[in-house]
Length: 225
Image (cartoon, rainbow, N blue to C red; front, side, top):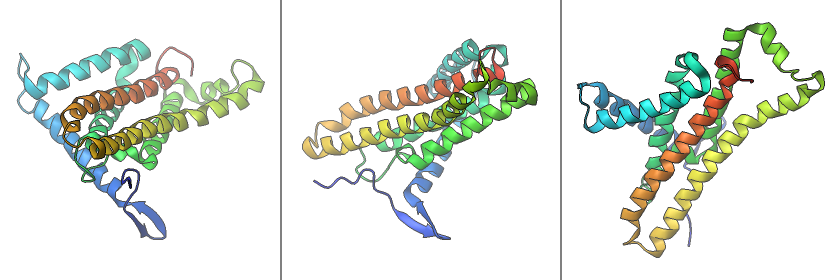
């Protein structure tokens, strides 16, 4: 049995290999997130229902987590964190839905997950400098003792790598499992997998976002970097 999952439509642009399916799905995911949020805020009601209720529940739950980790200054990063969550959540579901080879998750491509992880890491360092100053930023690399600078550098490199690999591995494995099950039990998988994929996509988006929040703790919170 030949597996289609994990293969990409590669085209060369200016000498660079580009996974075109990832590009398309990234834009589709971004558009869907925009539409979802617009639907949630288009006609706000005092007693929310439907899309507004679902989005508000997610936002309130996440903001409680952000506030608990980062303290009252969590608002400095809340838009980035919420955007990350909704993009990853919607993106995860794209490929885990039972649509054989028609839709793929942009998050099943290491380029996407690594890009998000590196971007989040860079923002963490920028916020650290803005909120604590250059002197404190340089000093924290040598905490608790000067020789620890090597360990701290390795840790900072490992953070985006582990973030990216965790999300990429879980989503790719989920899509591979879906394709295998569809070939083995084509009539029983779709409904069961719809529920299962929703949970898996939600959990992976939550884990990625909460880990980024923890890394931001030293930049805008009261904890150590």
